[in-house]
Length: 430
Image 1 (cartoon, rainbow, N blue to C red):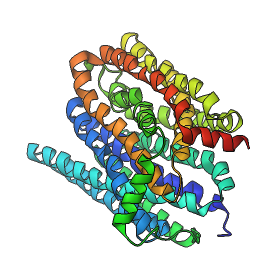
Image 2: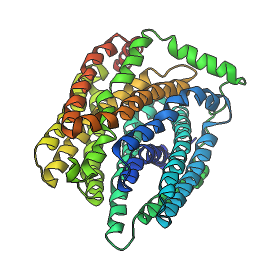
Image 3: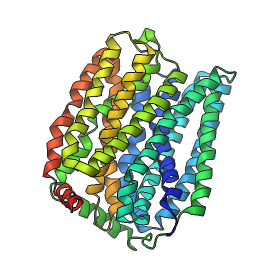
Image 4: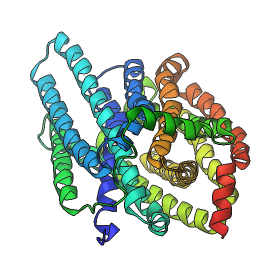
């Protein structure tokens, strides 16, 4: 327990952040580049959120069986295996031009991503639970911003610089889709390395042990204690709806940026898309996280939530502009940077909210329940977004998505009525 958290917190949250973005965003980019239609992409990749929704039901198992340390190391090794399989499937797709192979690839790769999603959700449970056990309350407060930054770095790298590198390979002699083979293969090696590194360096907290001997008891106690919280309905509504507008846009925006101009999209290259997301976007989201963490620490959740909600919602109007007014790459990059900064601010508030309502003996399970509910709030809108976009076109879809995103402002006042938030804010001042 004497090891400095700096030696493992950054790598833990890099490893936790990559799978989510690979499965939910990079899969969209992969299928888009291979020519699958928007409706098919959004509907079926929308199902990939399901493990994050369901993880609340097996989080008590992670609490009740073995240690969080063992769970997260095993999950990292399993993720390495899944990514190697997906790399192999992409290679098979490139070698076969038969129509049946195209559909077979979509089905098999989707199953691979779904298995990866279950592994990733388990990794989330174990990593977040380990964080709560390995660090003191003071260290948890200090590293909440650090862990968020490295989680976001992984997400932006996964959908930014690494995607740009894959795009670069296609312009320098690597035929499509073999640049994706290199992409997934490299990430498989990364996860294998992470598992070995963490097996060597992670301390073994004294409290990292099964919560109880009965899985049934663990499940009942975890769910009972969570849903018996005062004003739990307000907690559920806040978590479900805070990111509703973002959920509608998450899968459509990459398609809008990458699809051809003839389809009403912007038609930018994958390399440019990756550079924007991985440089300007990365800097903006880290700046938003840092500023958000500092503001939350200084002024508290209640004073910050309104301006953070504005920062989350208003940038959605940018896509209405881009869909209606011709814009150069520099202007696109500027608007995406501003959007990412606002997202960085807003997500710090949601992270703190979920930490505040995760309490008692089953903190790990409570955190998993909250993030599972959040995933449900992302899953359903993202699955519907493709049909909406196909029916309305990009321009009108972005108008509708922006108007729907205003629901965030309606649920912010609910957070002021939640006793767990009030108690946490009182403790923060003391």
